[in-house]
Image 1 (spheres, rainbow, N blue to C red):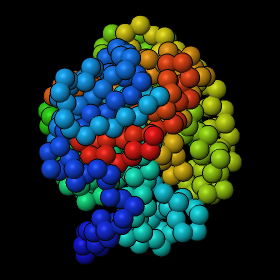
Image 2 (cartoon, rainbow, N blue to C red):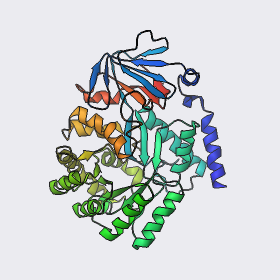
Image 3 (cartoon, rainbow, N blue to C red):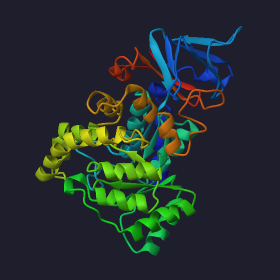
Image 4 (tube, rainbow, N blue to C red):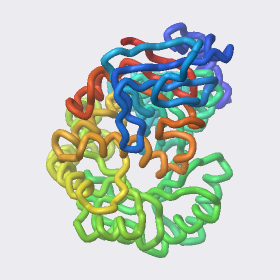
Length: 412
C-alpha cells in the first residue's frame, strides 16, 4: 500500500509542466547539440577559451573547437564557463520541513505522498543548482526517488543511495546487515563510527566492527563510507580498509597524511550544513539532540570545519571530494560549501572544481562515465555566468544544466 502511494505521488509529479526538461524532445529525435561559451573547464584541470561541447543522444562526441560543418542545434551561452555537472557525494535528499515549518520526523503526521513530493522538490532544486549526481546517505525512500529519476519520470540528479546506515552490533550481525542492504538495492554502505558533532563526535565502533562492515561491503561489490568526526574514529576506519571518511572535523595532520598514504577519500564540510542548522534553528530545535548544547556545538564547529578543510586541501596526495551533508533547508544551496572552501579555507578554485567533478566521480566508481568533458562520456554538463577561476562566486550563477543529454536549465 505504501509503495503504491509513493508511485502515485511520482506520477503526479511527472505531469507538472514546471518539471518538463527543456529541449528534451529535440534530443529524443537524435539531433546533435553544440553548447558553446567563452570558456570551458573540462574536469581534468584544463581550461579552453572559446570551447564547445557537442552532444548526440546522451553522450559527448566532441570537446574543444566546434567540428567543421556542424549542422545540429547550437546553444551559445556567451560569457559563461562550461564544466562537468557537479557531484555531491553526501546529501540527505529526503529530509525536509513539514507543513508546520518544522523538520519532518516519522511522528509528525505527514503522509508518504507529502514526503515524496518534498523529496522530489529537493531533487529538482539540487539539479537546477548544477549538481547532476548526488549520493544520498540515506533513507529507504531514496530508492523510489532514485528509480523514478533514472526512468525520467521526475527531474533530479542521478542518485546513489545507502538506503540507511549501520551503527553497531556483533561482526556477523554487521555483515548480515550489509548483505541485507545489498539485497534491497543499496549502491553504497554507510557506517556510523562516531557520535554526532552535536554529541562531541567521539568514536562508537571498534576496528573489528568496521572491518566487518567495510570488508563485507567490498565482498558484495559495494563501497563503504564512514561517518567519523574524531581522529580516533577516522584512524579506525582507515585501518579497517574503508573507502571514504565523512566529516573529519577533528582531523589531525597525522591522520590526513595516513589517509593520503592509504588512498582513503575524505568528504569534509566547510560550513553549509552548520550554517543551515543555525539559520533554521527554530525548525529543528527540540527534536532529538537539536537542543541548546547541540546548537552550541555547531557554532563551535564552524571555525573548526573551515580549519579542517584547510588542513585537508593542503595535505599532499589526499583525495578530497565535494560532500555537503545537505539536509532540510540546504538543498539547492550545495555550491555554498564549495565557495566556502575557496573563500574561507583557501582551496584553489580549479582544485575545488576538480573535487566536485572528476575526483568525486572516481570516489563513487563512475570516473569512466561522468566527471569530465571528453568524447564518450555521459552528457552531464553545466555552465555558470562568468569565470569561476577569477571570481568563484560565479559558481552560484548557474545558467545551463544538462544531465544525461537532457537540458533542464537554459537561462543565459
